[in-house]
Amino acid sequence: MTAKVRALRAKVQGRGRRRAGFLAAGSALLLATLAACGGGTSTGGGSQGFSPVKQTGGKLTVWVDSSRLAAAKLYQKENPSVKMDIVTYDGDANGSNYLRTKVSLFNRTRKGWPDVVFSSQNNETSWAVQAGFTAPLNKGLIPSSTLAGWAKGANDPCTVDGTVYCLRNDLAQTVLWYNTALMKKWHYTVPTTWEQYEALGKKVATEHPGYLVGSAGDPFTPEIYMWPGKCGANNVTGPKAVTVKATDANCKRMASLLDTLVANKTLSTSSVFSSDFDKNAAGKLLMMPGPSWYGGSLFQSTFKTPAHQIAVAPTPQWAGDSSPATGDVGGGTWLLSAHSTNLKAATKFLTWVTTSNDYQGKIAPGYPAYAPAAKAWLANQAASGYYANDITAPLQKAADQVWPGWGYGQFSQEAIWAATVTPGQTAGKSIVSLLPAWQKAIVNYARADGYTVSQ
Image: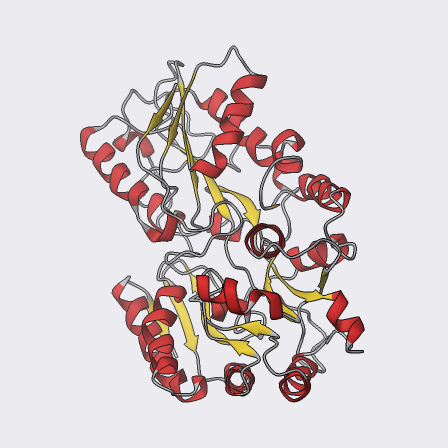
């Protein structure tokens, strides 16, 4: 049975969606006894890293957003003997905190917890661990050999003090999307450094005014530019500790790059999801840094860019930097409830939904975080014949190059950027001039969420 709990409100579904509550670290508190909040009798033990409630079986309750509904239905089809209650909700899209609110209620009433939940956010462990909701997975529930299959760093948002409390569903590693037809027509070379990227932007402004080399109009702009540019604005060093240096050298030079290209109008200041961008800018994109989901979600589905035009290259790096870095703009996570009375079935579903080629490799909308499934997904993308080059190598490399210096804090960098930098830009201020205000805002947001801040 499928119950409609709440309508999905995300503007873009399934390919890394923009989110106000994007990314997070875990809590400092480990789960000593989750049964204290549970709805049954503890089995004792604790060899799995927590004390499960009494295992009585019954229906497997799975919460998904509308984009993951196909996964739950496919599992039900492949496993008809498993009784399932598939519930759709908003997936915590745009930082709604619906899951956290409901878990708080379930903890008070001591009933109602789902067995497995998908969240479009990567920050759920920041509250779910302390709330006793999510079960530790690497203490016997899921073999280490299986967990080793995730892309490098993919499960960092799920890991607290070495314990894995959720599994990453998909990645949103940044790459450089570009139009091969225009590059060839104008005899341009795809940039490999940020310096070359800026220089090409200046050339385009002079030679082909009106054409674009990217967009800086969305709240996830810092994740596309500042993060892979190794700006030290968001270095989460512990469960409740963060170092904020939003005015460091890398931040300043990336901000300066953005200011230059915004000023010469080769960087759009409209959201890529806006009707204005779709109408006036989508057909004039020479190139655009962005996450892995841009290919299907934007170019193919939204912009309707013809086949055989769009290609992928690695994210540019600063000249002389021998350690390639990418950013990350989305993804999602699966959590298994510590209150589940059907852990065996719940763990089986959790493993299948994150690793199975039947779902992740064949029909999942985003780049799978589980590397073997990602290979199958990439093969399907190549077989579609849409792209102008083989996107496999750049996406695979980028998946392992997400810069670890930009952490997973509970506070939303997107919300901070939208509240601090965007209004300043609208008022005509440069991003460089706004960096101190951005620094102050990050510090304030982090402290409000209980973080110890170093500057």
